[in-house]
Each structure stands twice: as C-alpha cells, then as structure tokens.
Image 1 (tube, rainbow, N blue to C red):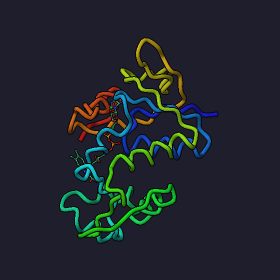
Image 2: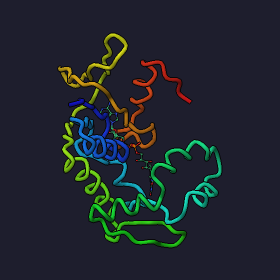
Image 3: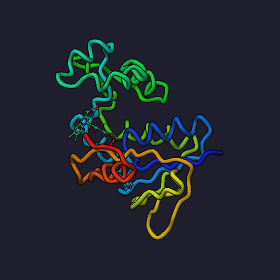
Length: 186
Ligand SMILES: Cc1cc2nc3c(=O)[nH]c(=O)nc-3n(C[C@H](O)[C@H](O)[C@H](O)COP(=O)(O)OP(=O)(O)OC[C@H]3O[C@@H](n4cnc5c(N)ncnc54)[C@H](O)[C@@H]3O)c2cc1C
C-alpha cells in the first residue's frame, strides 16, 4: 500500500487526505497546531463561506485578476460539487445574498469537523506534530522529519497554506519545502 504523508490539516490537507485514503493509500496527516483547520475557523467571520452557488463562468467573471490560475481546480471541483460534497457528508447548507453558501448552523467549526471526519472516516490519521523537513533519497521523497524522528513514505502532499494569519499555523513552511526541491515561487 502506498504511504502518503500530507503536511497540514487545513482545508486542502483534509480534502487531499480524505480522497487519497478513499483511493486506497495509507495516509498520515501532520498538523503543527493543536487542532485541525484553525484558519477555517475564522473564515467568513466564523461562519465559513464554503462555496458560491453559481457555475464556473459566473465564478470566473467575479475574480478580477489572474483567474486562469483557478480554471483547472474549478473544473475538477466546481462550486455545485462542493455544495453536494458537504451535503453528502451531512452538513446542511444555505444560500445567502450574493449566492454565498454557508452552513445552516452558521458555525465554521462545523465545516472543519465535517472535513476532519471525511479524512478520518476514510482512514487517514492526523498526527499533531510540526514537519521540519522533507527527506529525499535517489531523487525521490523518502520521509519527513517531525520531532526527533523520521516518518517514511512514498510521497508527500504539501498543504501548508500560504503566509497570511500566521497565528493559525500557516507560516510559509510550504515555500521552504517547495524551494528545496527546485520549485519556483511566484
Ligand atoms: C480572515 C479570513 C477569512 C476567510 N474567509 C473565507 C471564506 O469565508 N471562504 C473561503 O472559501 N475562504 C476564506 N478564506 C480563505 C481560506 O481560509 C483559505 O483559502 C484556506 O484556509 C486555505 O486552505 P489551506 O489548506 O491551503 O491552508 P490553511 O487553511 O492555512 O492550512 C494549512 C495548515 O498547514 C499547517 N502547517 C503549516 N506548516 C506546517 C508544518 N511544517 N507541519 C505541520 N503542519 C503545518 C498549518 O498549521 C495549517 O493548519 C479566509 C481567510 C482568512 C484569513
């Protein structure tokens, strides 16, 4: 079984973990905060505007700069699929002014709990430790270093977020990891 390590239990990490585990991988998520989804908790003023009820073209028309960057992600997971995803996981949603979609409960924490349950119910484990480094041997990722030990794996998904609101855990570590492996940061 392929061993996958996901770095970061934010929105992207929990979704990546859930789907990767669903397709049969042995998945471990590392999260450096004491809880998953700390940034998600403050989104939408604590209510989490989790999607917009519109099609892709309308969505793109409302993104003023560099919207081509989003095209592939949106095509793979369009707004209505996001709403269907949460409803299928048992999270009731509602549409408000401007087609903004929120949980009926008005609580971002319910969105976090739904995503964490999706990851864990599919078999992913969340380990609350900070990843300090990614190790490669012979041109391939072989482990991550967290605390005083190495965790071996066949692949790593970097889902560490950007650099905004660093107190939620996203302190830019992903840039450091990506740079180490030759990626250009734009
Ligand atoms: C105030 C505010 C309001 C927002 N409102 C909305 C909204 O209503 N709707 C919306 O769609 N978006 C909203 N956003 C944007 C949304 O929060 C982000 O797009 C989303 O959180 C990005 O998810 P992510 O998984 O990429 O990163 P994050 O959610 O930042 O998750 C990254 C995770 O990685 C962890 N991590 C980082 N480095 C390491 C490491 N070395 N080892 C282990 N773990 C690590 C972090 O602790 C963190 O938990 C808002 C953002 C802010 C700041």
